[in-house]
Length: 79
Image 1: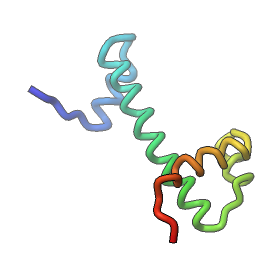
Image 2: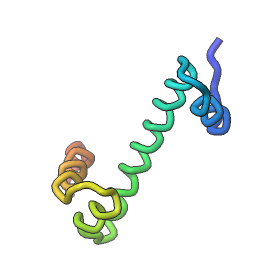
Image 3: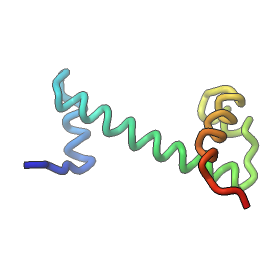
Image 4: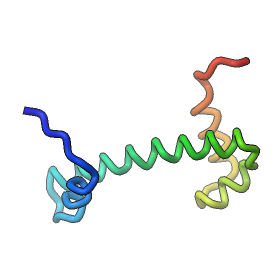
């Protein structure tokens, strides 16, 4: 039987002592954060934000943002 958990349940598991459930919750939230970071970077660049501005807000280098953006857009068709 496959269970689907909501965010509240995953947060509860994340707060537990180390266990399979707490590490699964950590992995779950890391994936959600990575997906949202991707969306935000793509939207910010499309809206005209400079890589430097995004980098400052993320606490990373401008080069890291540029590399991430290139990875995110490498498979997109060119117009």
